[in-house]
Length: 224
Ligand SMILES: C[S@@+](CC[C@H](N)C(=O)[O-])C[C@H]1O[C@@H](n2cnc3c(N)ncnc32)[C@H](O)[C@@H]1O
Image (cartoon, rainbow, N blue to C red):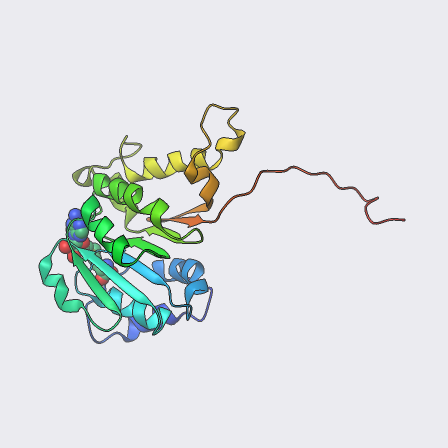
């Protein structure tokens, strides 16, 4: 594994002796690559799926004292993992009223990490409820996407309705400008900079997109 920054998260994970933390090791490199620009900048992060509360504590430590970490979990017992800078909302990740309540309190969310039920319908609903609400330079990450290949989660190879197929469709939407009007240019097209696919993880990076331009320069440029 290559850690792209100082490897804080992996070191934290290895020395964790408090709340339960369960992560695939190769995720740490992905987190560092996409999240490091928010460190020390007081981001607001939503993590769907709290379980033992270990990851919420890790994010708070990583992003710093001005950050706000919001957990969503269907299990009311998870509330015990609230602490300074960490708030937990109880309910299902696909509940529009719950999402509205969170955004009413925290309108400026920078990062969403979906580590919730990993059921296909929930993953798609959460993306549709949250993606366009997050900050224009924000990040939406989904992990444990291996369930996209598993029938008991509503997945399967090339299964319609799996979040993997949904994300592949978003790749076309990202390129809609070039589809000769086959695909409409959507808000997603205009607000998404890139989609990164990894083993079991997909990352959507938001950034307002300007008009596409193809320019030509030659060796004559700059010569008098
Ligand atoms: C994989 S665990 C989260 C692990 C945690 N993020 C970590 O890294 O240690 C998944 C959690 O999702 C919660 N969950 C299951 N279905 C859910 C739903 N529909 N909405 C919100 N949370 C759900 C479960 O209660 C469980 O706590």
